[in-house]
Image (cartoon, rainbow over the protein chains, first blue to last red):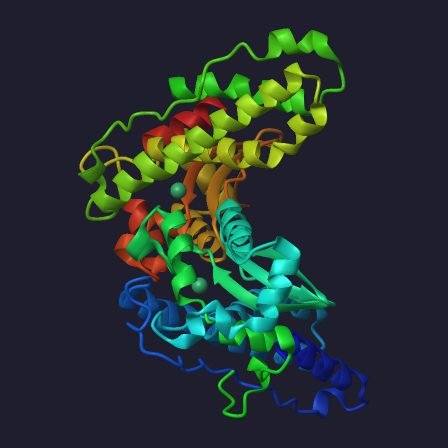
Amino acid sequence: MVNFGNVLQGYLAATQQMLSGDQLNNTKMAITTYTLPTLPYAYDALEPYISREIMTLHHEKHHQAYVTNLNAALQAHVAAVTAGDIASQIALQASIKFNGGGHINHSLFWLNLSPSDAPETKPDAAPSLQTEIEKTWGTLDAFKKAFSATLLALQGSGWGWLVKEGASLRIITTKDQDPVVGGEIPVLGVDMWEHAYYLQYLNGKAAYVENIWNVINWKTAEERFLGTGESILEAPNGSI
Amino acid sequence: MSATLMRTAPVLRAAARASGAVKPMAMASTSFVRGKATLPDLSYDYGALEPHISGKIMELHHKKHHQTYVTGLNSALETIGEAESKGDFTKAASVAPLLNFHGGGHLNHSLFWENLAPASRDGGGEPSGSLKKAIGEDFGSFDTLRKQMNTALAGIQGSGWAWLVKDKQSGTLGVVTRANQDPVTGNFVPLLGIDAWEHAYYLQYENRKAEYFEAIWNVVNWKTVASRFDKS
Ligand SMILES: [Fe+2]
Ligand SMILES: [Fe+2]
């Protein structure tokens, strides 16, 4: 099961635990340091749909910046907790949410993409999910249309998601780097920030949205839908 | 303000009235006699801001992105007009987010083009006159203003704008940010706007947005900014 809320939840729990102790100022809190996950494919593997140049910058620079800034924010937060500085703790929430969200979202995104010639990019790789999609939208094509329309209607930076809530599927968007949190499980995510397509598609985001269906990893989507996949945040290699 | 903006502003007011209106049909016949928003011409060539902003960025930004906001604004206004003429105010109100986004996009970019100029002409340098004095009073120095703007720009999480504004009531200057295409409204008069959307710099600066925020000061048109300040 993809337990994407853990970055924040685990951290807040640790903070709380610390605050409840008597030895507040003497306790040294150990915090997780997050690292950039390795991509399971080469930077040029999604061509011609997503260029090598985009993938390189997106992963090495953008995602890395979220990881770096998340670690810095968490570090500063620990210092603020230790100092009993509540104002700084509150001020850091936005940065933790933004950079933590950026880290979670991109980690989910890379894994729900795959080279177009791989069997994972065939919707057949997601039999149960496809059945549920057809129940909800009638056909896979109708779902793709609805999802694409939602992506294109996004105002500003953000993400489009297929999520599972309880037994049902829904299409939602999140702004900027807000992660999908609460009772919903992200099944598929598509980055609609301009950096995700601009070098190749310029202002033509409709073409990016049309093309991304060629590199969607349906196998990952099926695992997330069924809850059989490994949590990206509890990966044994500690990559996230 | 440019002629284009002058034409657009009453349209926005009319639309705001219409979407919040509870008065019935009588309004419909009068509120929507209006012109369409159009893409304003630039007063310099696309390549004129180089090397600070590339010609390719300027061309796409003006011809494609700004045009999309103009088209979206006209289409939102049309939908509102139709809905209003049928007395369907629920429908008219539902277009508000599109009106805000595309109307804001049109206004913001129109202001942006005018507060830029080639470095060889009016771009760059430092403000003078009454504006210089006000900046000194409210920020301490021009350099502090620059730093505050750049910090505000760097702190935008997602797409948006940073603005040097004048508070109409107190008369003081300040720096504010706005998400996406939210326009500067209310008590604030926008004096200088800087577009922090990725499309404004990505082709040239990629993820190095701090370099774009540094470079753009070389093409800020202080004459325009000063005239907005003096008129407000
Ligand atoms: Fe991204
Ligand atoms: Fe823009």
